[in-house]
Length: 222
Image 1 (cartoon, rainbow, N blue to C red):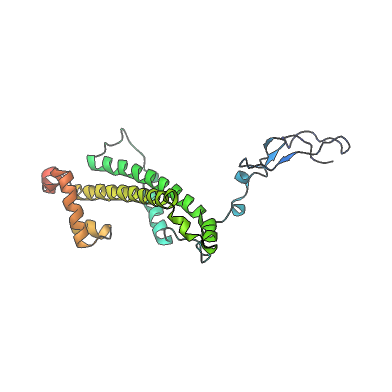
Image 2 (cartoon, rainbow, N blue to C red):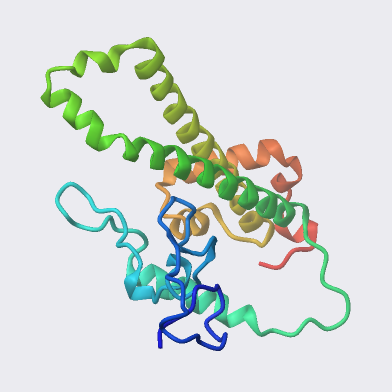
């Protein structure tokens, strides 16, 4: 007995002399096809985690580092500490600064996704680009339709991400001031130099003039 040529593994099998060989479709559909339909057991999306491709590596063969383990653990503890907190009654209203943090966080995520895609496209050109250089065609990178367009695309994506990061940090500074933190406290929390913390405080107080008032006058806790 052998597997029948259907897309269902649970069909009653036919005798060997009656069975028709399944048709495997190797086209780039994003899945392994069996008789024109996805073969769930063979498709990449159903493969065990250890069978999935390794992440891209640096030219040295090392996997590019992301957040280190200490930071990942700190983030996990932070979110876990609040993940199961029940909400009693109506959810609390966000302050203007918290709402700005949330909006800035969304913008930062979108900018990161766009930058990620641009960088993925850039990385995908590595092999052919390296081959072109080895063939003595490095000057072709200076073609205006290639060099200039690629430079502007990457530069714009990086600038958008940096702008979104700045907006997010500025909103966090406003939240800190609104909760009674000093410039030194905020600078320490964000690993800012004293000068950079001062510039952020000045920018936040320019954008939200009410932050210039003493904390006690706004009724916030120290």
